[in-house]
Amino acid sequence: MIALTRLNGQSFVINADKIRYVEATPDTVVCCDTGEKLMVKETLAEVTRRAIEYARVIRRPITD
Image (tube, rainbow, N blue to C red):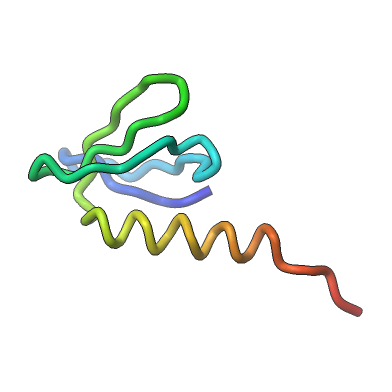
């Protein structure tokens, strides 16, 4: 899950695995695999960074 901010300032979390694509129009729009589109304050680069970091944490091998 990654935390993002709506344009009105409200924070929310989204399952990064459900993000289909992100675009800048110039506002950042997160498009989910359900077809839902969410406009967020974060930049396209920041959403991408958070999604990659989430994937790294989730897919990190379990070590002793």
